[in-house]
Image (cartoon, rainbow, N blue to C red; front, side):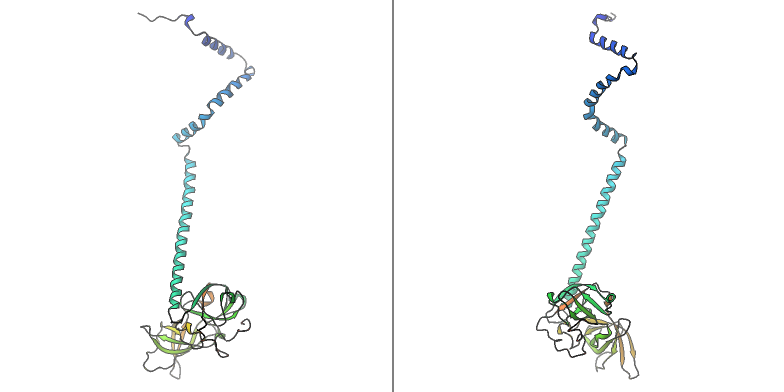
Length: 303
C-alpha cells in the first residue's frame, strides 16, 4: 500500500514558526538585522574551545605547519652543534692538561733533586721595551726568587728570573745577549753525555753559539743532536734541562768546532712558563759570581 502523506497538522508547530520567521527576515533590509550579531557571538563562544585544536589538526593534515616544524628542527640542530662544540673543546682542554702534566713530570725527572714546578702565564714581553725578557704573573707571594729557572711546559730552558716583585717577576731569556755564557753537554745518539761546549747568545737570530771542548774518546757533535744544560753556575735542579738542538757545525782556523744551538721553542713567544722553584737545599746558584748568568737584576729591575 502507498505510504500515507502526513497532514499539515502533523507537522511540528515550532518548526513551522521558525521557518516563517526566517522567510520574513530574508525579505528585510540588512540595516534592520544588526541585532542578529548578538546571536552570532553566542554561537562563536560556544564553538571557540574546540576551534583551535581543530584548526591545528587541519593545518597539520594539509601540511601548512611545515614552516614551523622546519624552524624548530633548525633550532634543535644549532643547539646540538653548540653542545658538540663544547664537548670537543673540553676534550681538547683535557688533553692539553694531560700533556702539560706529563711534560712537567718529565722535567722533574731529568735530575734527582726535588723541584716545585709553578706553571704561570706570560703577561708581558719585548713589546714593553724589555727586549729578551718576559713578565710573568708570579712573584714573592708564590715563592719566586732571583735565579729561579724558567722553562717551557716541557724541559726546554727559557731563562732565569732576574727581578721579583710581590706578584710578578721578570725572566731574562736564555738567548738574550746579557744572559752570558752557559755550559752544555752534547747528548749522543744513545742519549749519553758527549762533548762539552760553552755557548754564548748571539746578537740576533735567537740562537746560541760556541766552541766545543776537545774530549778524547767522545764522538764529535752532529747536527740534530740535543744539547743539555750542565753548568755549575745554574741551580743544581736545572742540570740536564734542554738548551736546544744543534743546527750548524763549523770548523774554525784553530781546528776547533763551533756549534750553533737553537732552542726547541720560540722563547720570546711563550704564553706560559714553568718556574722551577728550588728547595733550600738547592743552593747551586746562591754564590753566583758577578757577571754570571742571572747575577744582574738582584736589586732592581733588569734593563
